[in-house]
Image 1 (tube, rainbow, N blue to C red):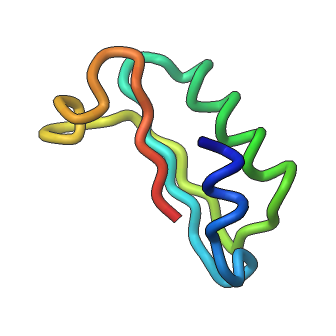
Image 2: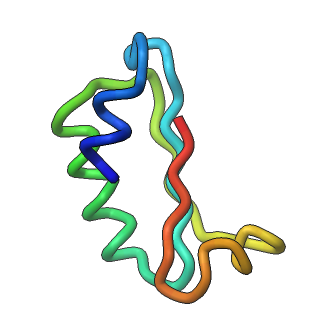
Length: 66
């Protein structure tokens, strides 16, 4: 997933990276760190899932948007 994100993003320095985790901040932080070590983004947002996104991520899952 990290490889795909890094390869597909265009002009990362102009983008905002948002990562939301569902009851697994350790996994979320690990993925966030892996991405930000390879590309530099304008801003990073790290948060818990809420509402309908919790259903999509499921317990232990993450959602990444850039």
